[in-house]
Each structure stands twice: as C-alpha cells, then as structure tokens.
Length: 228
Ligand code: 1GP
Image (cartoon, rainbow, N blue to C red; front, side, top):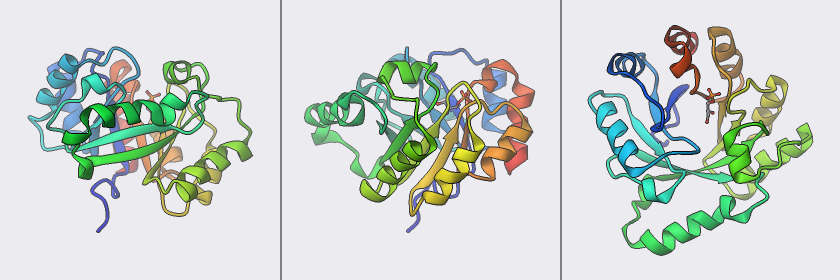
C-alpha cells in the first residue's frame, strides 16, 4: 500500500512560533494544498504546537508534525515527520536526538505514524543550517551522493532538499531527482511565486512552501494553483 503522503504535490509549512490570523489560516487550509506541515527550527514549544494543531483541526486538510524538539511532540497529528540531517557534522542531528527520544518515550511511540526524512540542508545562512551545523558547501556530486545515501543506503521514504529561505539550484534538484530510486523527493526553500512553484514541482515530487505565507498571502496561494 502506498503511503498516505505519496500523492502530495504541495505542502504548506506553518511555524508555531509565528503569528497567523484566523483569516489567513482559513485561506491556507482552504487553499487546496495537500497537507499542512507544522514545524520550525526555533521557538517551537508544546503550547504553541497544541494551539496551532487545534486551529488547523477545524479543517479537513491533513496535518502533520515535523519534529524538531521532542518536548514539543503533541498527540493528534496525522503523521510525525522525523528529520535526519544527512549533511550535519554533528551526529546528534542524524541519530542522537532520535535515540534519546526513543530511550525516553519508546514505550509510547506510535511507530506506524513516524516517517523519517533525510534532510540535505543547502542554505548555509538558514537557521536550520546553523542549528544543525550542516556542511552546506557541497558540490553537486556531493549533494547527490547524500541523496543516494538516504535513498539507497538508508532506504528513507523521503529525501528533502532544503534551501529554507532561498530559492535553490534547480539543476541540482533535477539531478537529485534523477538519482532517486524509491524515496519521495521533497523540495523546500524560497518558493514565493507561481513560476518558482512550477519550476520546483516539475522536478521534485512534493514542494514545501513556508515563509511566503507570512509575507504575502496572495503569492502563497498562487503556489497552490500553479501545481494543482
Ligand atoms: C522550510 O522548506 C521549507 O523548511 C520552506 O522554505 O520557508 O523558504 O518557503 P521557505
């Protein structure tokens, strides 16, 4: 059986640490996007995650939590995405936090709802790159090799090429896609127009749109129409 997320083409990522009015949230949830992913690199707490989940739950759109901090794991999401940063220089971001969470909470893990994502972080100026001390100055060959390590070696269901905050190298995205054997390829970073959404969606299986929601709602909504 194909996973629940395999048909997703467009995902909006909402940050619990940022403010979104009810009207804006309504537009996001009714936009026709395939899913809402809740996540952020900093300032994500149990309380702000519960609050955002309860607001999104008024809508039918699937809602998944991307876990960045195991103290902010809230029950009631449809799925839990577990980032494993393939190009971090710190083992804790690849497997260490995960091991500690399993040690402490393994007895109550909803294993069937966990989906690991192999992150390749490409924008060295992003909060996530600084937090995880990712090695971002990669050649195309090195980036593709990380993607293949996630796909072929670790059999991760998702490989996520992450340019958070800046629009990435579409040629590299195409190369990564062509190197994929079975992983679903997510692309995120700097999608702030219909054109960029189309370009990234032509190469990746699933595009993730974040920042522009908080900057320009009309443009954010265009990204859904561009790919759906
Ligand atoms: C961030 O990949 C997402 O994790 C989306 O990036 O915020 O730049 O759209 P942006």
